[in-house]
Amino acid sequence: SQKIEQNSEALNIQEGKTATLTCNYTNYSPAYLQWYRQDPGRGPVFLLLIRENEKEKRKERLKVTFDTTLKQSLFHITASQPADSATYLCALGTGGGNKLTFGTGTQLKVEL
Amino acid sequence: NAGVTQTPKFRVLKTGQSMTLLCAQDMNHEYMYWYRQDPGMGLRLIHYSVGEGTTAKGEVPDGYNVSRLKKQNFLLGLESAAPSQTSVYFCASSYSNSLGSSYNEQFFGPGTRLTVL
Image (tube, rainbow over all chains, first blue to last red; front, top):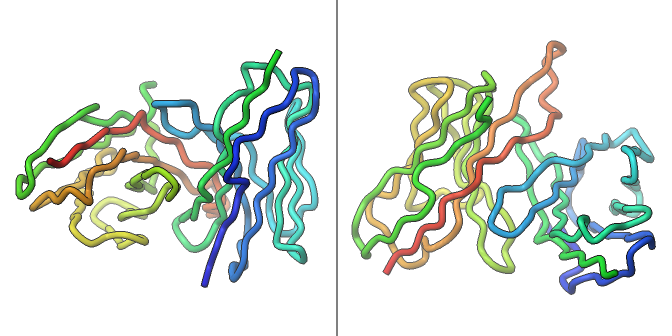
């Protein structure tokens, strides 16, 4: 069966460290993968998109990698700040019309 | 630009009642989506639309109907609400670029929290 797995347990890190979040998938062949941020009580907000032929994408303090052999994406936040505390969702592009299939998300907490 | 707006923000229904959730976007996007989000389940696609007058089923369409009579609006209907439809509902929109690629981000509304008693 198809599955998208993200760390179900919350990730707690200290301010200034690099946070690394994992997204693993099985029985999908996504053309692209996206990462979103979701704050409590609000809708998800897009962060980064990476295509199947790209290994790495960067945007300011954010970096995402995409390994189609391992079927895994890693999402890094460098020099993390308490304001980075949120739930991060990965989503696979799984069909026409820009349809996305979402993982359950990983809650990140950055402590002082 | 308001982006994606959803009406209402909160609603409580009794089992068997019907209601319509309204989603509006002012970005002239072709694609629109309805998701539900439940604890431990993530976002799941209910229905989507790739253009005015067209709709298609997503992952969990049963118990819901949709209509897209105008490009900027996407309506989600519950004909006979059930407690299993208690959830947070999100609408989103997206676009295809000048090259026809639809590999683009989705813009989400603030959500509607629905409780069915």
